[in-house]
Amino acid sequence: MGTTLDFCTAGESHGRQLTAIIIGLPAGLTVEAGAIDRELARRQCGYGRGGRMQIESDEVLITSGMRHGRTLGSPLALTIGNRDWPNWEQEMAVAPPGHSFASQRMVSVPRPGHADLAGAAKFGHPDMRNVLERASARETAARVAVGAICRQLLSEFGIGMHSCVVNIGGVAAEVPQRPDDEFWTKVEGSDVRCGNETAADEMHTAIDQAGARGDTVGGEFEVHVSGLPPGLGSNGTWQERLDARLAAAVMSIPAIKSVEIGLGKQVADRPGSQVHDPIEAGDPGDSWPFSRPTNNAGGIEGGISNGEPIVVRGAMKPIPTLTQPLPSVALPSLKPSPAHAERSDVCAVPAASVVGEAMVAFVVAQAMCEKFGGDSLVDMQAACEAYWQRLRQLWQPRAEGV
Image (cartoon, rainbow, N blue to C red; front, side):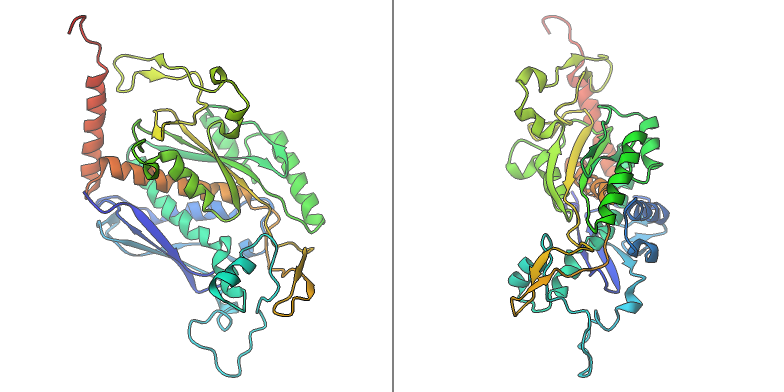
């Protein structure tokens, strides 16, 4: 069995580049760089984005771990250049600056809601730019690149991934419990990633009004995973529970403040008869001869995938950088001062939904590698087929008394 699928990223918001290293990918997976670039472009779109999106046009460069379009089973390295780097070469230089250099971009007034002050305390940085550069959501571009590769792995097993925005600034949009292709096409054609046109128009208005006030808005998105086999994750230990892992991954996205699976917090207000999904018999010839009229559990029961689509919801707070800054204090004087203002967005919920897809794709791909793991894609596919065959035999109707 190969190394557990994992990844790490490096890079600062205004640094030379972002880097991601993925370990544990099976050998023999065809990776299309163009598909990664398309995911990066989806992350950069969305109504309410700021000026930086007009500068950046992210493209991935795969520098190791592949040969002739296929993974080798060794660590795979990705880089994404920052087009804004020439404007920051002195301020963000890796080498020590010359004696005459004095940065005009030092940050000494923390922003409420950002990592500035807490990070300065943790790392001892008098210049909080050393904190905000890594805390910036720019890092999520590298995660989207990783997620794009995980999606290509999952597609080998017929697993699909979609996301949509369900709330911006208090404007909510309902999502069908089992969205069809027509719904997802509407989402991809919407600049707020909303499948309801009326709600999308109201979201535009909420974003425009916030921008006019010098304010920002947050919202919620949902990620839907289809085609997943039952049995991923485990109830054996808390670390193995699939819902816990998904929650941690989505919560790790900058500005995400809550995560829900399926009904989420609504389960607290309903009786059990309106929460739990009845089990119905399906076609006895199917590998998984069960169906559910509802999917309130969001595809996970007891920390284990149950054969239904997985539904994960993330709530994003408003972006902390305001053009009408909140009160703060200057350091080290502690004198009252408006918070630091950095170029930013009014709303990034549509982008967050794409990042959410990437993080969910990683966790699901990791769980697939754990259950069907091998050093090559062929090994994984053989193990997965053997698993389905076992399920077919397990649920075959038996003669009475046998």
